[in-house]
Amino acid sequence: MRAWVWSFAAVVLTACSGGYSFTGGDVGEAKTISIQRFDNVAPLVNPKLSQQFTETLQQVMVRQTPLSLVRADGDLDFSGAITGYEVRSEAPGANDQVAQSRLTVTVRVEYVNHLDDQKNFEQTFSIYRNFPASSDLSSVEDALVDEIVQELCEKIFNRSLVNW
Image (cartoon, rainbow, N blue to C red; front, side):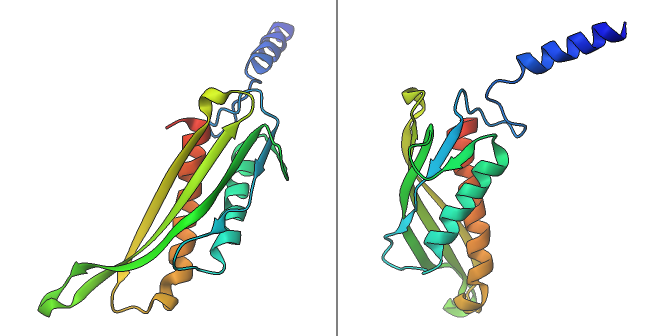
């Protein structure tokens, strides 16, 4: 009986060893991933955003897939640019005062799956966070950018490998 259980377990593990990660990302037959630097071409530039975004996207992809990160020519390849970094007044408050401001980050992503060109895409992703207009942007910017970048990277992961 014990030999049968082990044989069954071995068959199941072998059958399930395809391109799925434990987080649900389908990498197919891909073994490597490359993520090019996302330059910041937005009219308003946060000097740390390009590096932070690129590194966070790399971390998300490596953490949530079995893929190896390579500098270039990965089976799966991400490139693009940060095209928007905008702060604007959002919600009016009492006495014609602005109650909320909004920080929005927009990223253009080109995803190339060198093993299955049906999965390639170019898409713009945009995430925002509101903050009290009474707050100085510099006092909340780092925390807001951290949240926005993490959410952007999760959306890109879902679009490219979970296909949501």
